[in-house]
Length: 96
Image 1 (cartoon, helix red, strand yellow):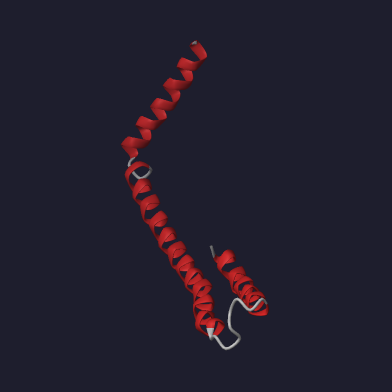
Image 2 (tube, rainbow, N blue to C red):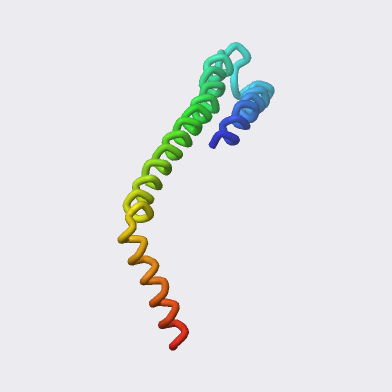
């Protein structure tokens, strides 16, 4: 979306120039001056929210990864159960 909105600025400028040359748009119409601020703001807003969403996703990953580690890896009983499971599943695989 960021790349598209960045390219859109130039593409709309060229389209307005061509339409003006074909007399589809009157030369005095302030179309470009009306549209230009929105075309500049669009990639800026998308970039800002991409950075914000990346930070939030990273924070969520850290929080849930820590919670999972606390519940499984920090619990010695759970570690022992998991080790028993691994040993028994590998033993069953050798028998089969």
